[in-house]
Image 1 (cartoon, rainbow, N blue to C red):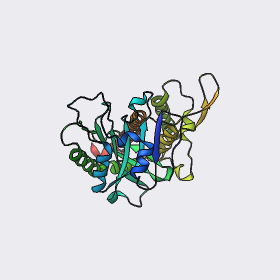
Image 2: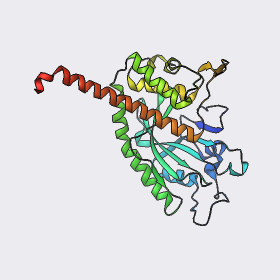
Image 3: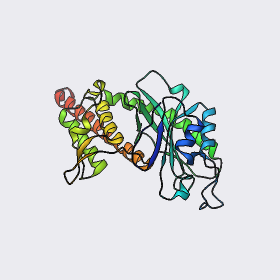
Image 4: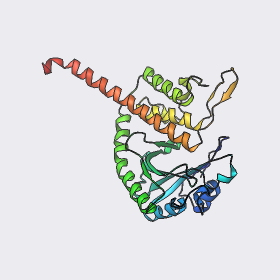
Length: 288
């Protein structure tokens, strides 16, 4: 069991085993809220996230990661936006990756219930989010929230087969050094714009031997791990030595994760289109 630690405005915790309600309450108290924030009106249907989690547990889903955005306004700390990453018992296999369901919510009006598909990669403890496989499931705080969330989670889990089909394609695409650098450079632009404290080569650096492969999936994961977890040595705009910080905030984590996935998928499309064009060019006489 381990805990990420960072100085970002975030409380987060991931375990190798399903989280108990006590652990959830300690690291993300807003999940345990017993009432909506006082700013919510009469039409707001308050269903505490922990009630939804307990109902999902009955359907075979278990929470493995929890994070809550810290807020300056202490009045909102017990109601602020939070994220829960869950796995279904039938989806846990001996593979290198496992599908996860990401549940977002708040009790202060900043978020509806949202569900999206994700992937957890064991070798580097990376929690990825599939950026464009399917539309997020959004459920308003009204009506039969619990049943709608359970239905949405089941649908997302079923659609995870498409995510793993896509991963299989990524693993079969080998990148040149220049293509890897181009992917990393674009990722730095997503993270820091024109003022990146690190270079493309820095985020391509593997942390373990198994991640030295040049395929798109492994390259993408090296970049994602270095950008999301931080700890990469670099220089600030003034030339001072610095170390990058982890991306802890719920919104920032989701946004960057999805953007990186879309970036990798764009590279895959370009590579596959190029391969098709080269094949046709080589065999042009056969189609004449």
